[in-house]
Image 1 (tube, rainbow, N blue to C red):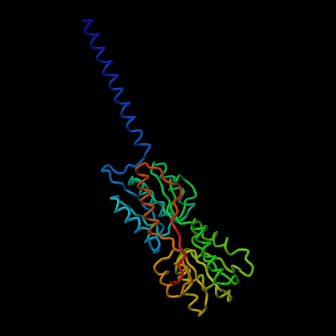
Image 2 (cartoon, rainbow, N blue to C red; image 1 turned 90 degrees about the horizontal axis):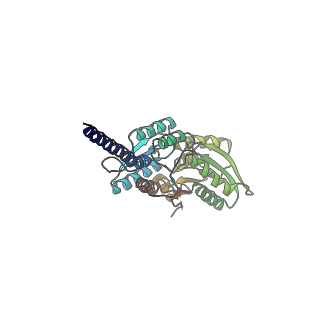
Image 3 (cartoon, helix red, strand yellow; image 1 turned 30 degrees about the vertical axis):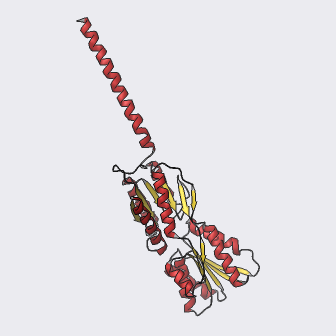
Length: 316
């Protein structure tokens, strides 16, 4: 009887050890998966990428989305797009929706670089890598930022205007949405070019929120109080095209320079109406963003800042 009890006790100990090893092994196998978040994609192995875009009412961001869609399709990945329509609260809600869907990577084109921080941090907490596109976020952990050098682009526009003015004249600046890195950086580059230049003065600098209709109305108001204007720099083409309408309505000869090289703007440049636009190549930005997201999903290291080339477009 004692011999039987000893054998039973030994068997229980062996089973207990085996059970303990099994539990430990499962935890060890799960740990890397948890630390990698959703970077490996869904259960089927397909990578799913989220794109939270500021607005699809702007041709620039439509082109960016199309570039991203093409790159995702070519790679066999799935792209989920949420459109904030320039509403910060709606964008944060859209990012939260992408988090709930457990996408592999989230690409964010912020409506507001400061306000988007809470959404970036929410993705960080969910262990989903974040990439910012065209506009940066002012906080949270971002693995990579893909954009043109907006400071350089603003300076290119300012230098072009100075050349056309012969170093003398009054300039109007139409600013983008306050709080966006694109507006801040394009304005910075522009002022680096034109500030403290003898004979050159920025007579008005007002926001028109990257919007064509606002560009028109703001420029109309500026021209009423500033009759002597020789050039306009708008932080994007939509505002530039709106400003051009105001200029043409008053029959004035004013150089208008935009930023983005949308189809409408390039046509206007080639028709001799707009002076120039800075080509930011949005489709290339979207394509590069997806290619970077795919690398991140595979656990590969990527550069923290990835620039996309700029080009000044003038009449051919």
